[in-house]
Image (tube, rainbow, N blue to C red; front, side, top):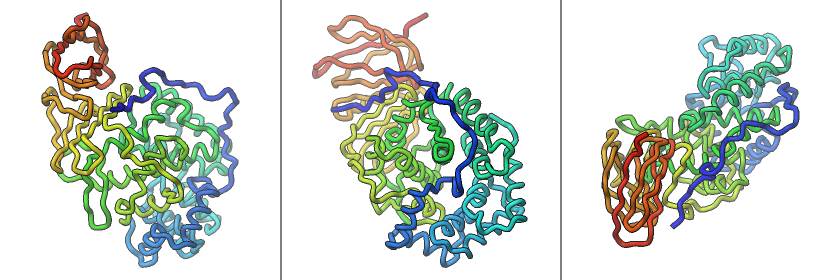
Amino acid sequence: MRYLLPVVLIASFSFAQDAYEEDYHVFTDAPRLLLTKQRLRLLQRERERQSMRWLQFDSLISRGAPMPEQGLAWALYYQVAKNQEMGRKAVEWALDDKHADTRQLALIFDWCGPLMTKAQADRIAAKLGKSLTVDTTGDVAKQSARALAAIALGDRLPDQGEALMKGIIRQWWREGVVQNLRAIPREQTYALYEMMHAIRDNLKIDLRESAHEYFTALPVDHLVGHYPSPFEAAENEYRIPVYVRDGEPDLTDAVFSRAAELAMVAFDNNAAESQYLQGWLMQDRFLMRGALGVVYEFLWANPYQPGLSYFQMPLVYHDARSGHVFARSSWDEDATWIGFFDGHLQLFRDGHVETLRPGATIPPIRIGDAVLMSGHDPEWKFRADGEALFVLGLTPKTVYDVEIDNEELSERETDAGGTLVISLPPSLDLGARLKKRIK
């Protein structure tokens, strides 16, 4: 059995970009945001061939269905179909004082510029300008919206956006986020990729280079962090990303989880990790047809991109940098699944998810040739028979003495999440003891 162990185990973050002098000025032509010439041609070709993604998007727009992100939906429709009526609706939406969503305003300003009078453009630009106060704090979604606004307004800024973009890229990202990067909150991954696309398309700067190992692991980490069983909604089936609240899944989270995956593949479609993700995405039953998801499904999906079958992926995933462990008995939808992430331990079986309280123990669970079990401090014994043992829920970044039958005493350190990985000698049944090292 193979275990997916990202290269972060032996590599550290690199914070230096290439030696060339970076240019933070925005000089590109509109549309600057997300719709590169290549992507726009792809979308227009999808319209010409009447693909199922276009037909679903066109159906909702043409019949006037209410859309959760109405301005964005109208603006995208205008760009692809050159339907000026829809473009003018997007502009009117942006002019309405009730609408202050920086991200949607930036996309409308960038995509619908040819339809605006000077007075309209000035008014929307003024609304956007309020979001551009010098600030290097804030979460990913807020900084992503600021970046989109700065790029959209590049021609109107005295320095072509240089100061704002330098602050976001250098201070907020490289000197802030990356220095303590373990995991971007899953619900903000899509916003991160929107910003990454916009920055690379306009400034030729790839934010991944400050955290190469993190982004190498991210597509697979994101994929395996879904429960095996899909959720059947009225419009389509959804794969449900991990969550720790009570109650039913939040389908908005499911929409943006898939949107993030689509944007990841679009950002780097050559990487093996992206090709597994593409294989995961290209099943028609999960194609988003609802009023929120249809925009992202149409915007990012590339049905011409080949993918690899995710059934070929290992059943056990471990990332020492984040401390995430995800394992499943198979890739079938009735599989037993175990997840240890951000301090939470969950079991999924028989269609139900169970979140265990901190410190709770679970008996050893065999996944292929691996055994997973939860542990507790300070000292305990167990018996295991397997190729690798994953002990979950110990103290993070802590040294433990490990004693295995017929083996010399050794010391091992837990990862950032408190997981200890022990390679076991070939044996049907053996004993092992752990003891936390006292400083």
